[in-house]
Image 1 (cartoon, rainbow, N blue to C red):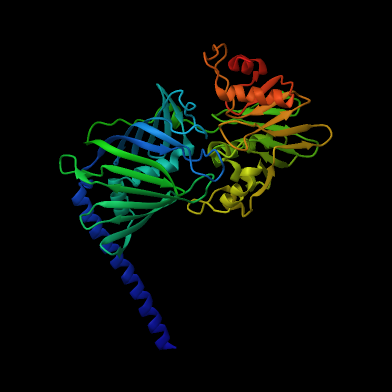
Image 2 (cartoon, rainbow, N blue to C red):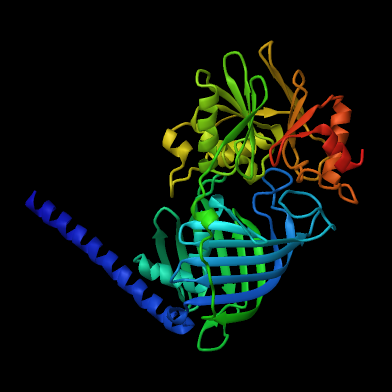
Length: 481
């Protein structure tokens, strides 16, 4: 017995010693990489380039590749001491179908300015800042998996190491944010970073970023000339770097509107027992039945979903949430479905997306457990194949496909015939009041009117899942129909 105890103690000591040795080896490799690339001399860095990419989470068909885009302008600033990042890009579609906020194929480009400082993420549209908490994890990940950022993060987090041929493989975790493995060559250059980060739809999501063409851009600081990234196995970025500036001025003060941001769910009655829930970039609609309620849309992420679900309980405290209808599978519109499933509600999705959602929601958010993971529940998902009616004899909601749209396969709208209310997302987003209609009608607007006419709906008002409630006549005016 005494011998077994001594052997056990010896084995445990050996394992601890081996772990310490691996950490010491990792620190030695990271110091080499730091010296070779000049990472320790970099406080701020700006790199510019162009290339191609895709819009993550905006596939036309559920489970297929994200829509391809052209990235004609790309600039990223990083500020390591302040944990800050800014990314400006100019993007246009490279294929006609799929989602995202980009103009339709051949009708223009989109300019995006995405920011991070510490634990605050926001977007700039002109001079206006809009909080973007759903993007926080991704931007923290992007900052600390940059070529110099990953070296600094690995040193800070006590990385471990093993060898694969001539490459040193360094592994570390940024607690609650991501885990990463970096492959570093004998010259001290980061060749690849494989990482896993939490995501509100796909759960723990694999990301792989490769860096090649390392060169000295001046001042003894080296940086790669090409960056290629995949997410969930699909390429999202391929950038050729043309300019690098080290330790230039970079201001990243957090706007007051961002630091003060909280999710608000602001409800407005649209009819007896029907509420339009706004207060953010994405809306929801609550419908009361005799013994339960239905929520149409649970978007973005747990934080938005929790605010909306709290408003649902406040508006109708005595009835369970039985169904949550998802307009379509794009990630901004399905990011709150895990939180909805955690309540025990059944998720109503398009039949083309049902299998994909079931498989996707089986992957947990284990890096930072979300509401579904914490609940211990399994997401219950049911499909709509073209059309489905929900009724209790006093209230009816018909869910229909929007056919022929370039936005998504299985794109759905909800029709309340008694109230003459139409609920839709992305097919039409009302502009400001009294805004003149576009000179050329948007194809999505025309397609929506065509579907309403096909189904014979006599629509009074639209409850959009973006923007303000409007009479149907505003859509007709915009579509010139």
